[in-house]
Every structure is written in C-alpha cells, then in structure tokens.
Length: 334
Image 1: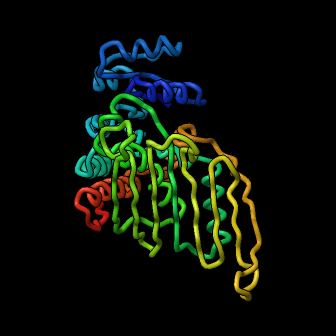
Image 2 (image 1 turned 30 degrees about the vertical axis):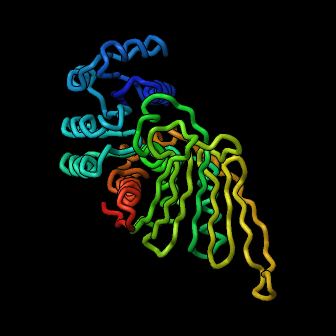
Image 3 (image 1 turned 120 degrees about the vertical axis):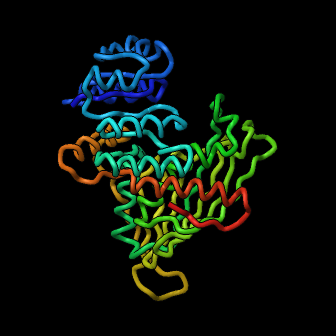
C-alpha cells in the first residue's frame, strides 16, 4: 500500500516513522506547504519518498498513492481531506477532524460523495488500559449511570496553544470526550460547561473547564480539567470513575482498571468484591489507528473513528465551548 503523507511537523514525523515501520506500507510521497519542509524531514529520518514537495495534486499524480494520511494543522484538515477525497483517495486524518462543525459536515459529505473512507485517528482508543476498562465496565457494573473524568496537567507548551481562546477544550478535551463515548457506547445530547483561567495561568485563553453532559442513554458524564495545574498530575488520559447498579470501576492509566461490585444487598454499606482487569494486548496509539485503517481498506469493515462517528465527539467539543460562552445548557448538534 502506497501512502501519501501531508504535514512534516513534529506529528508528521511521528506518522512518517509509523508508516515506514509498518509492513506492506511504502511512504510514497510527503507534502508540506512550507517549501523544503518535507525534504528536510525526509533527510532527518533517512526516508526517501518518491515525491517530496509542496503540491498535493502533483504528489498524487506523481506517486500514485493508495491513501492519504493528513497530519496538517487543524485549520488545513478540511481543504486537504476534501481535496484528497475528490481525487478518489481514502483519508486517515489526525484529530480534531476540523476547525468548525461546518467544515466537519462538509468533510463527511465529501466522503459520502466520493464513496471513499475518511477515518480520524483517535489514538487513545488503542490504549490497552482503556480497552480493559471498557470491558470491566461492560462485564461488572450492570449498566452505567455516572461517568467522571478528571484531567490535571501543567503543560508548558509555548507556541500557538498559549494564545488560543479555549486551549483545553479545543485542543485536548476531544480525547476525553471521545473516550467517554467509547467507554459508554452513548453519544452526547446536552451539555452545560464553564471555562475559566486562574490568575497564575500562563495561557491567554481559558485553560480550565468543567462540563456536565447528558448522554443518549441517560448517563451523566462529568469532566473536570486543567492545563495549568503543576504538581500531582493525572495521566494524559485522566483519572476515571464509572458507576452502575452493581458497583463502581476506576482507572488511572498508570494502573490496571479495578472494580468493586456488590456481593449481597444487605447492610448499611453493602459488601463488595474487588476485581482487577488485566490490560489488553493490542497495537497502541497511532500504530493501532493505522492497523485498523488498513484492515478497513482491505475488508470494507467500518473502523473506529470513521467520520460519521467521529463527528459526534467533535460536536461535544464545540457544544461545550458554546455553552461556556453563552452560559446556557446547549444541545450537542451533529
């Protein structure tokens, strides 16, 4: 399978390594709008694509790819993805799908019109701990009524994130919101959210947020997060608690998921049984995304992150931002 990679920044280089190390995949072309960026990255990684340059159409004509991997900036995702789909090329893109919901809807339509797969790489779905946690929830809790996620990291990025209006919700919360959908099997319906920025924050925009989602099955998903919290950090996946009629389950990425479920329905505090779920064996991160994408191309199966599904996670992000700005409960509209 011949791949055309778009984007030669830090994440683009990571994807180049991923493609180059994958059996039966050849990195046939590498494109970046910055003159010389793709060639420089190719030399740095000792990878020699057939085409290295700035022009997506010329790259497609020259190297005859089987698919495109879009690792451009979020603002460019729409133009790159739509152009590739119109050329008849399946696309595997980085998150977030788009910079606006209008763009995301247009990208879904372009996939429909072309009859070609467009999948967004939600790499957290391929975390062995998260997959084990979902199994624990499904097998032990007897349903799900409460799902909470806490995310606290003091991320001193510098660069564009420091200048964003909503850096936490727009750049990072998509992971946690998508994980909530993955764990629960439910979609967001309504949200009330609040953003704020503590006096010590090094971000221009609101680096902290609280959000309560009403999900499609009646679940309440509660998110509390901060990107300006030095000390006592959570993992990048956050700390989770799920509660159902049979008990509760917790997960910190640094630990195996654990549940405590009721043994008998007597007494003031019901006696519980503790169960630890071993982590699953699977390809992690973007290697898992690429594997599922390639399998879908080969078999026609619907992958996780397929655009009709992933837009539902993106919609949760933009609804939370709108709720924060309007100070109202907002419908999650796809």
